[in-house]
Figure 1 (cartoon, rainbow, N blue to C red):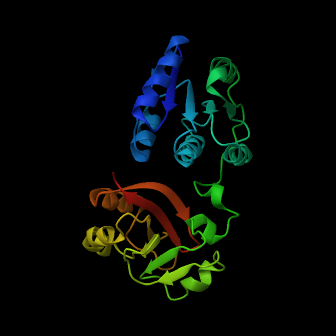
Figure 2: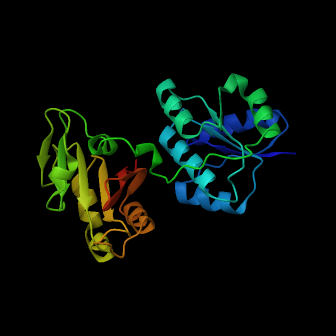
Length: 258
């Protein structure tokens, strides 16, 4: 019996989708897990195929697929994407052209075909940042027209690095109720741990990017992506997007956990 890993971000819907796949004779693992937990699981298991539902949190599903292709142990596992908005699916097809793309009414035949012909020479994205490679920094960060953008402790030249922003965007240096998006630049683990609770509280309901220096940067610090995620979760936040801002800074996007 083939074992299918279903990736979905809503427990009730995941259970329903899993039951559908089980009715076709597959063993199905469907438990909803966070990004790091999911990747740790996939490293130690060997699913026959991975089915990724794009109806909810499609960027999470895309990132999971990129990690699957970048890990040698899962590189040749067939990936089947289900549903999703047409424009986002089109961009995903450019990134992973040898994955399968289908709908839930057609999932049975699509999954059978994917299992019968796993990718012989899988496309491997250069990095988890590949989807953002050609996008302007403002677009990567999700800066929208009319936004009030708080830059907390930015590097001196960041306004120039940011480049052109959409119309009517206001840049401020402090967090407040009027802020619609914030970027906090943190340089050390000590600074992160000492201030994350206060920064998260002042950000309120606004999405908060926490940026840290890349290991390859001249200003590299003792921070890692895992450190930033762990601190954000401990402060009552949940991350849902990652971004390579430029050659110096990476960032995770957080929002207050509901």
